[in-house]
Length: 104
Length: 149
Image (cartoon, rainbow over all chains, first blue to last red; front, side):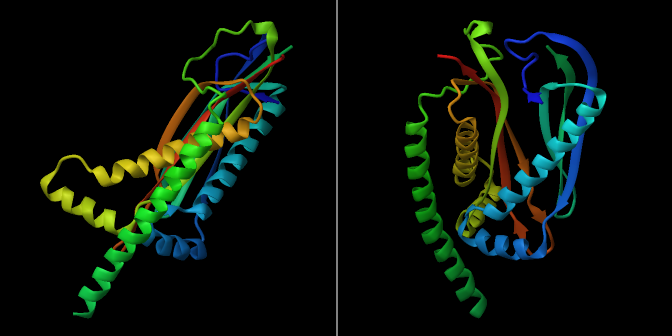
């Protein structure tokens, strides 16, 4: 599966469009990480636990998107975008969407 | 009285440790940016490379969650009274974005150029009655192009 965030796959021609595919996950932080984060919050700096958590969730959202594209028979996803929104206290939604296409 | 002592020591801790950590982080950012200078990351959608020469295109991304220290948070809340530039938060955003860009470049490995770079910021802080974890995530993503030599 080729994934890009530009309109085409450079060096390859698009044969067929399948339309929008998307994947999302909603993750809450667990309490241990929250306590660590509030301690770290005093001195500032990177919250590694959160970075890792968000990265994992985003990976999962992308995998769901890829799965959807695969079921349609696509072999590439172009123009992928990400968005993040906090839906509830301490929970965030990671969303990835793009256009499934078939390239030669 | 006890409250005041706790407050002042937190303030001192935030100022001391926060400034030290920020300086260290900036040093490491500058160092890695120097090492990665050969790989340009541009917001253009296409670059001047003949299409048949491009061997692969791949989505790359990087992100960082960074929080502000206690001292700066107090400073910012004081700033809220009078309004104006919140200088203490500027470095927070700057660090998060540059770190995200660097991680994206690290993921790209030996790619030639990264096109269509987008940077996104999301506040993922937890809002509660007592404490507010002020942190934000910066995420950078783009398409890494590898050109055959």
